[in-house]
Figure 1 (cartoon, helix red, strand yellow):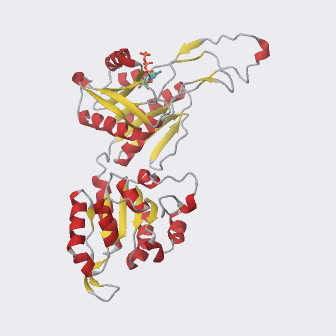
Figure 2: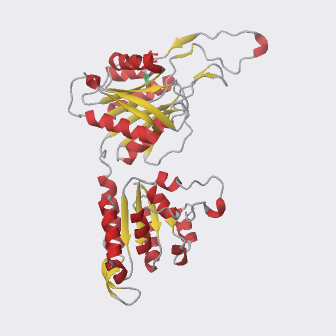
Figure 3: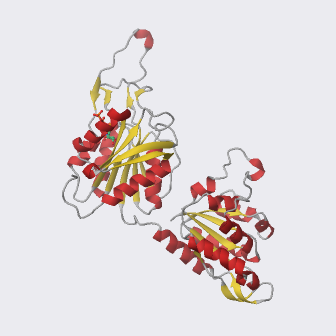
Length: 405
Ligand code: CTP
């Protein structure tokens, strides 16, 4: 299943998109609809809203300027965009790169697979301008579903009819599958920051939000991997196609990782695991009237990554993270790769302002085998996630038996 944005532009064939949406839903895709203003003359947005279970996007500024609406939300949600029917006007706007409505804005802000199913009058279809626009779109990687030939709503006979729904769905599913090279690959990702209880209400914790791990999980899932996320205290939206296991403490995370790592082809340890925990978690709440000062003895937690590394199965790839500061931190991160015997270490410089913990952006250095290092300048965490996955896949070899060099 995938997250599909169904873009409906104007044309009599717009009514067929209702059936198309239902077919996509039956195939377990999550569909959200964006309509051009003119398309709403053919089908009421309420129809799509009621059947999809999601608000329909029409205006760049949101329905009646609803607060919290972001004009890029649809692009962020989409694994693929299907425009059906695609009018000559929408095709021209897409080819020219216009962002003159929510549908064109969504398409422009999206760099994943785009499927376009044109439907229009035969002469409009055959016009060199339309054909040139389609050639431009195809040249950029869009998948065009050619219209069927037959009697059109305006009485003409020729190409321009929307093809059968099954033909369009088939093209969309092929496109989504081709964009999913990780089908059959199983990935375990740890996320968030563990909290080690001091008493029933207090804990020793850290500032990890889980955003980087979430971006990795979303991207891996979007590429077709079977993803399990072992999450410590992460409050972010969850995808239905990812398995989430909540483990608030380091010990619970260790137990979950022991259980899940055996099936994983790739393990990405992105969680900030507490290195120490209170020796005793006090039952109930510590009463501050009992003492002016408090000493809390701490003990080391197990290093999960080291344990997984010691029990790695042949071909399994391990990625660790290192949150350190500055140039000295980079040296420590390199040493961590050796010490923990992992394939890649992703170094986060926590001293750089405005990135890292809680932020939507990150800047990382990916440390690989043979002194291979890739420095990623400040970028959204989704982009960092893509590069980390690319780096992992570049050295992923399921048949490998030797540990990392
Ligand atoms: N890690 C882990 N278990 C722990 C601590 C850390 O699995 N108890 C993992 C983290 O998820 C991360 C990597 O080890 O992938 C590095 O974590 P970090 O806390 O930066 O490193 P430490 O091992 O604590 O480093 P050092 O001993 O140098 O402080």
